[in-house]
Length: 357
Image 1: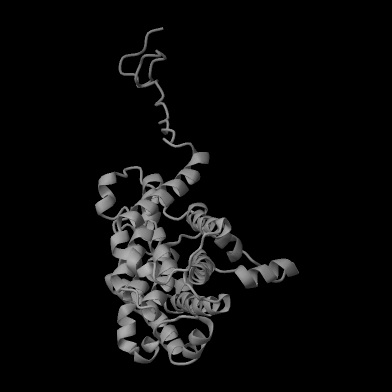
Image 2 (image 1 turned 90 degrees about the horizontal axis):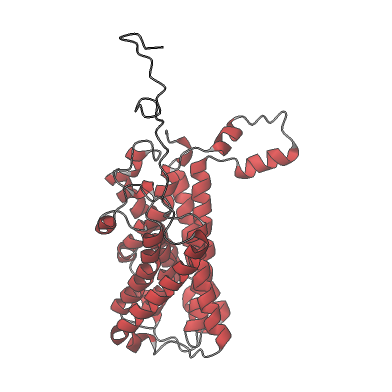
């Protein structure tokens, strides 16, 4: 039967564009299969690190070789490599820098699309060991800068190639992609929180320098060259020196916590009823009954302490000739305390619980 003139009903013809359903877009499979991505990440990172250290040996080896202990046992080398792989695993399985945009272009490499989570974590965890060498073994600051840059590049470039960067690190993040975008992008907030973190690190280090550390270092580091920096440290200059550390702490701790959006756990906690809850539910609520933002801040602070503390201890004890394990533990504990107090300061000053979405 013919259609009535002017009828709006579509025909049943298969070729009619009105009746042909739009096929769903098929996502392209990843170039590297998922099971091979992390092993490839480890190989790329270690290979890149080896090439960069070899290329900069004329600038760094003269300093590092004078303080490094001779480690020729296979288990010592294997232990360092295993620890390096575990650091990469924390970033990979922790989901850092995992939100690649659909419009990602490698031209963005020179703009904002960098692995800022991993860059800041690497900076914060690798700095204490190099700071120790500069302060007490008189390694040139340029050598420490070379080493720190190489470590960051060797970590970030493979992540950039395989992942991207998180939305909360984009100044022009899509609307609704992150919470509190105006707070995250506010230059005054960024400057204040960076200075706050620098102040916390400066206070902890300065307090240690002026109290127990002189006797401790001399007692547990055979062959330490110079401890004059313990007595010559000036608080304002120490704060200024820790400004890059404060920026890294802001990037890794404050920004992700502030930008975290509420999840299903937030809804469950909002409906918590202490009158009907069991004892286990009440204990869990009191221990972990925080918003997504606070939980993010706690988790990242814990990661910074768990990764940074062992890294500082391992490299100070294994790589520095004459270092005792107890001495390396004391040095790493100072930085673990500074990281913990920085997380507490961000929790308090940032009023993470009360920010609006």
